[in-house]
Image (cartoon, rainbow, N blue to C red; front, side, top):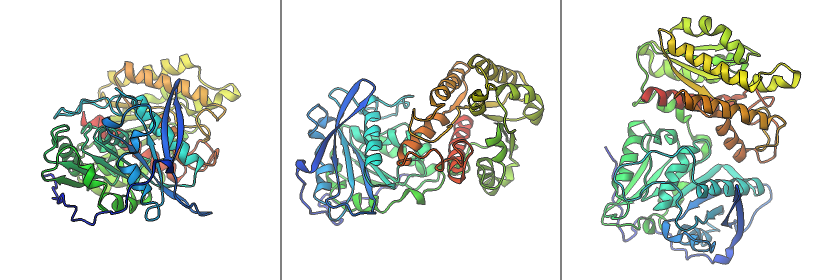
Length: 477
């Protein structure tokens, strides 16, 4: 059931009375995505103290503020925050979407959702890049990065939070909508949703459906349906402490692991006597130990789904590559009669090339196809999740010695998954996105790994999250 809270349009809930800030408070900046350049504005705290870090708000404007003047997008929240810099010191990033383009490639007036596109639009990706650049260059508190948008930007907020579940401490979508079949990816992110019940532009059903789905997943979204309010819910939402004050109270470090939460939650697709085999190298071999990514998932499964007699089986061996997996598929996987197989391989196929013991691209692709073909022909016919390799070094994208080669092998995995209709767990993309936000000092290790390859505690949480999300998705089909 949707939670509906009435808010009086007279702004009875502690209005923010501070006036709008001046546009001159916002630095003019540009960011490139491929060959395209996008303008954005940046608001800084009025005073930056040495040794302190500050929250960041990524704001996505509505359709009426599109253009190329790098000015119109400052309406509403950005100017409000400029007038509140003493009360809420923070960075605000506001990129302008070009005319006739969208943050999210959907039809706003539809009452039913459309599937999320595989790739974000260029403007949405540019907003992410502008956010990353700000985090790299300024003292941003990376555990207090917030996302909000209105109308077209409300759609963009839902879309972006589903694509980047590891980044945001809170999301505030206003009169937007999104793909309810993907909203589980952001189930652990604190979310406050605003929509007017008299909205004739974006049907209120779009917000209701997403909130209902989050509630079924065991999440606790805050939903404010504004009685008698049309397509300007932001006028109230951004003028009350209900949205701004609440947002600033949230921290990412308080968030649970989203993937595990939804996998074992009230909408869990796990079935009786499910047998999930994790097939890979030393990273997977270590993952069955306490704190490892398999152990984290298994602990939650046994606590919440003990009556289903589910088995999570680690089948990783140190140093192994695709050809090694081919040799032991029957013994270590098919003999277990799995219902799901999670294949995480490719690091050693690339890494060992430095000593002449790697796997050629041709053998890597042929080996993956052989593994999948043999599993499809087996009696158990397990559902297969194919993961791309993560990292060999944690520096910025393209800065690690084997990045280009690793990208090629990740692309092979994507191609095999697409051709053979497998579920893809794109760990390569997700890990790069994560490190682009959190590796401000250009470290080669220490954020997700102990040595640039093998997972530390946070890396195991990260992989557990994405593996569990993939298991949820493949079993929910």
